Length: 320
Image 1 (cartoon, rainbow, N blue to C red):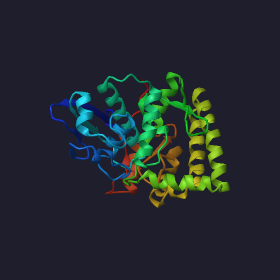
Image 2: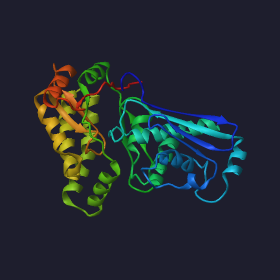
Image 3: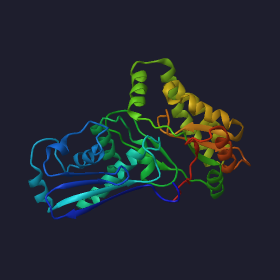
Image 4: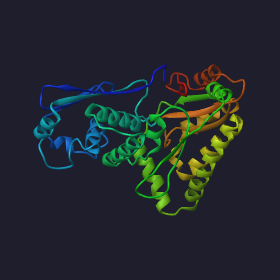
């Protein structure tokens, strides 16, 4: 985004026996010299919910008992966790929370000298999501930890064993995607937790439309991979459109009046469209028609949604 990777997390030792969280983008700073506040999780509006969940999921702070003094003495010192997300607003739909979680876990592992694999990162972020009660899964952190396009599968069950396949694309296909893929910001924010609860509720309730759409989305993902691997970006765009219709069957809250107005205003400029994340706001992704430029989309949006935050985002796909 805007020419740089937006997520950064660093840890540094301090002589004081305390844990410090410093979130630059949220402009919040917290210092903890007792353990109980660090063990208090479950409130997604807590400005340090993510950092606390990271320390718990990584086993640095126990769920209950002990004192902070004995833990920091064993570690050799107190520490500061600096975190920053730039150019991406909260509630964007880009999975920033899960990617930030993964960055926190990776930073803690490296700071503590703990050996890890990519699978360890995925699993620890999944645990963090449950600790924070945000209801997230594994797709965001898998998508954000490594570059390129991934095809990710897992069998049902509490223990998720992920199979991550990096999709090999020709240079021509990458170039075409770079030219035709566009992110659009709606100016709206949303909390994924509420949308995800609705989705799970419909699934558990065996609602026919939801069950059909969830089954179709799995098949659509396989076809998307097939079309991209054979260099058919037009076919991929059509499937993206179909995915959008399926998403609305699963949860009508994934769309709203503004999102529908944005898509309607650029309908003749794009071949495929889909919300990012659970929907309801944040960013939208589109595949442009051949010959259409980002500038043309930007001009149309400014013409229709003047004096608003709606507009084309400055972003690019990261291939390596």
